[in-house]
Length: 100
Image (cartoon, rainbow, N blue to C red; front, side, top):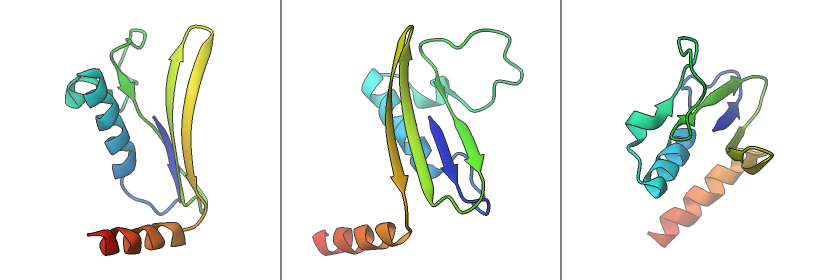
């Protein structure tokens, strides 16, 4: 899972990135805490198939981008969401509140 936000965002990975990883782990029947990998600097082996890796970028004024990669040899599927404005979050919050 790759995610990018503006340079002032403190948490890394973001809550949204973690929620995506948790949803993937749940769908696969995995315990997220056991398969999540936030740092590979001390790892001396190739990534396993039962691992969810996180990569984070904090730069500029990026509102929010999240990509989940599903890859195998010779191909990959990328699911990406990019928010262009924080107004998107506000309008969705209002819609959710009205729904509740």
